[in-house]
Amino acid sequence: MHASSSTDTPRGGSSPVLILIHGRHQGQAAEGADGAESATMLTRIPGRTPVVLDSPHSGTVYPADFGAALPLATLRQAEDTHVEKLYAFAPALGVGWVEAHFPRSYLDANRDTTELDTGLLDAPWPHPVTTDPVVLQKVRLGKGLVWKCTDDGQPIYDRALSVGEVEARIARCWQPYHAAVAAEVDAAHARHGYCIHINCHSMPAVAASHATLHPGLHHADFVVGDRDGSTASPALSRRICEFLRARGYSVDYNHPYKGVELVRRHGAPARQCHSIQVEINRKLYMDERTLALDPQGSARLQADLRALVEQLLATDPRG
Image (spheres, rainbow, N blue to C red):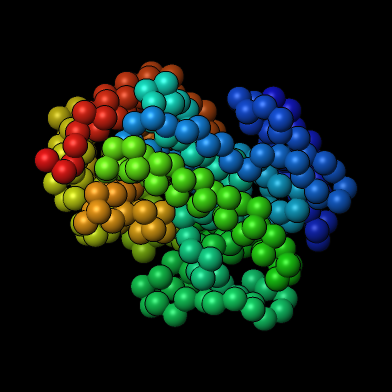
């Protein structure tokens, strides 16, 4: 899975954080003591069709300046592990693809830059912070732009973060990722007059205490979200739900996940930009404890996802 690795000791003398270099991408490296990195933080593969996929949470490159207080094995539980493998067929179909390599616990690309818990910082934050009570529910769980704790409530840091390092994470990770997704969505729309954007995620079989507003919930096989029809045509979202159910999967729609920042930014059904978040239950394709891929489960799932994407390629939501 990974071509090479090195270690870096986090500030505060805690357990080492492994810097993982994703083997299928060229030109990635990590430099040691000063935390400077030349690692590519995302991949963008331009498409030629109206369909765009992005995976913001499957990253496994742990930057040297993370400075976390937890071991890598614990941090890795936050990943949408293997999601990029499930959709590996997409670029060959002409589908635009954007994939983050940085981990979501370091910087969550599916949160707005205003969704920051300023209590993590050693100085006042000089930028806007959300006051939206609904958005703040997740921030208070420790799941804002920069995570405060793991899904089971373990503090990620034993130190305060500086304003400068959070600004650097935004500049190095958040801004390029959002620019890449926007470029793919805009290009697809310009080519075809419409775009179908799928925001690709995975979820644990059972929600942990600090993961969602529904701790202990046993998830369906899939959760399809369009923010209550505001980011995509409900007919298109329902078509995805019906396709998956016909393949034998249990599917929930807009519960417990409606979609967050990426679909909110790019979903504009009135101008034929349709953005839908698709969550896949990890029990379908991997061992959640070891993170090992289940060959049989993942092969079946990938075949069904390919068939779904092929159906989307044949779908014109304008008609």
